Amino acid sequence: MGLERADDAGVYLINDDLAIIQTVDFFTPIVDDPFYFGQIAAANALSDIYAMGGIPKTAMNLVAFPINQMDISILKEILRGGIEKLKEAKAVLVGGHSIEDRELKYGLAVTGFVHPKRLLTKRNLIPNDLLILTKPLGTGIVATAVKAQLAEERLVRVVQETMAELNKRAAEAMASFEVHACTDITGFGLLGHLSEMVEGSGKSVELWAEMIPVFEGVEALASMGLIPQGAYRNRDFRKGMVEFAGDVPLWLQDVMFDPQTSGGLLIAVSEQHAQPLLQELIGRGISYARIIGKVLEDPSQLIYVRKNG
Image (cartoon, rainbow, N blue to C red; front, top):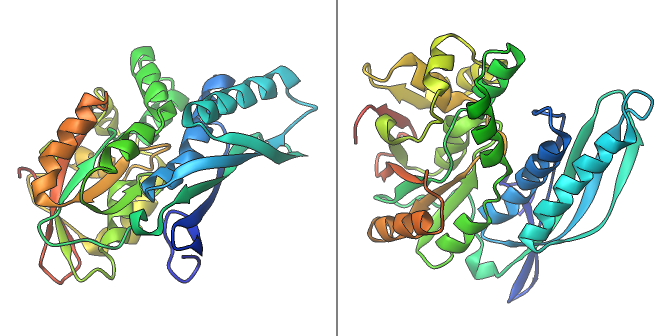
């Protein structure tokens, strides 16, 4: 799997029992704390491996650092945060590359293992599958509020901690159930990444807006208009695939297009396994997990967003 079929990562078959998954991701700081930035960037890069049913094995650092403008202690803290997440993932740092740059950037190139029969992709939706989302939405809106100095410290702390959480426990939970498709929610937002699952599938999806987990406090910020530019781009790009019922509030529509950093997994699971998987996720401490929608037989390849399920 590669460029001819874009997915969360590339996959190369080694033999009947082993395939390797390869992914890369890095970005500029989204939080002020360098240690948290390192954790979040690493969790974000590792997430693509988990989304495809794999286990991270090795990683390489990618660093751009303004050595003449920032103290080297900042870089040390970023790398320490990244290494902590790699240890939690039981993956090994095997090297990396750094350059001097005017703008700080950090991330990882990650390689994982997966049994070919356990490989998950975006595009295998089955009618009557239920959709589970494992992390709340709103990280882009909160980051915008931070820049405007309008975000409460408590909310910022909760969002940072959630972004730094690995999707490891969610991936381990879904390994025991009949999962048909999976992706992680990042820069294209919930509706952007769900559109990638729906596009070309011959199926449609119904989302239940009131079931979608959102960080507490995001409604007020979104209602104030603290929406990142990326959310508008996401909406413009996918508006032809999404139909909102009239009672879905505008702030929640914006949240569903909000670009996420290190977001949760979006899991399409058989109807009979959805509730047991949800309970397994919650039992593993993933308390935000919710069933948020259903796959429809409808061949129009649209996403219908209703207020209630």
